[in-house]
Length: 148
Image (cartoon, rainbow, N blue to C red; front, side, top):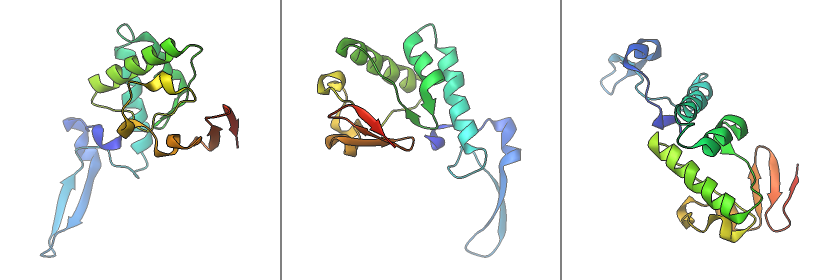
């Protein structure tokens, strides 16, 4: 997710670093994208997602609300009462994120029909079993309960 966020040209001077090349010479470089592990990375990535969601609230109101209210770092945990609602939300989330150059991975569900349109590559490897971890909790997909 982090490398999807480009740093604005006017802000790149604040992201300078020294790099010693193979000849031993020091180069003064600037980051062009947000890197994982920097102190500011979390803020920049999640704020970019939130700004994108706010800009597209009219086109994708439910997806925008989910991103703004139920997302922490790169995990979104939510629920739907009906299978059709889950399918619609998944489509809306995928569309909203794709319009900003983002893509969700590790989809999980307790009802197989809810994410029928999500490819196996996009699903969590652990969702093939019946346990899925997120935000320090373990979700039993089969029995639909959380433990921590």
